[in-house]
Image 1 (cartoon, one colour):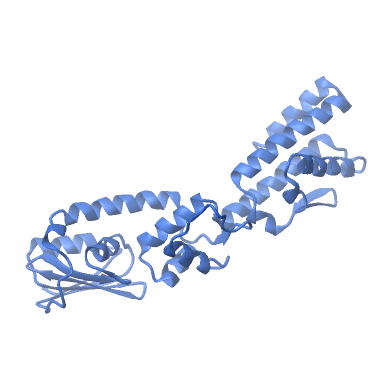
Image 2 (image 1 turned 60 degrees about the horizontal axis):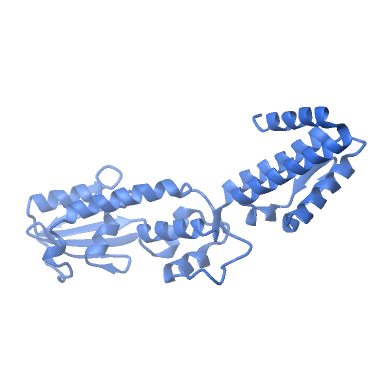
Length: 287
């Protein structure tokens, strides 16, 4: 029983199940993004597997979650060696399915594989202990590779790469470049909304811009204040702002500037008009 299949049509789990249920002795050869994997069966029981430096049962677990590539099964192939214990195969299918569920859940926490990741400006903090896989991925992050390319270039199993990237993103060491660019655009929009609502073009735009800068400096946001400038009565930001601008940072900055702008408007325009201006500012968020 020799067969060939595409992993986008038949999953590795389905083929492993087929070989196991028919109690075949032979070898399953997989080509996954140019990386080769081998799984050997003896009367339907997996006895040896290799994939990206992994040997034995862990190699099977990591192969089983792959969704792109091709495979060939060849019957009556001599067994190279035995690296999988019999007790490890008792709940093999159940454990593979469990890994697949974990992997699918992990994918919901990661950006799309077409996303380009970038390192945060402040780098690795002293209180963060990095593993070997963490350092491998950090060295590959160059602001040009997308996640697909990182998986390929790392020479690590896809599960290890995804677990590592999810942890590095969660710790704030990496960020999704496209997501941060959208955050930058929202940040600029928020600043310009404040200018449009409270300042009068050609009259006091410079004063309100100076007030925004002063507020940022006084409230501990001096790093970001040096990354914005007034250009033709519109506020622009440097591209480098994406390396420090997080959703939390953006939210705190916005709350502070909304409060400060309302306080100044109360002093200059009175409570009634200041309240009206504040409502207008909030309504602009929905546009």
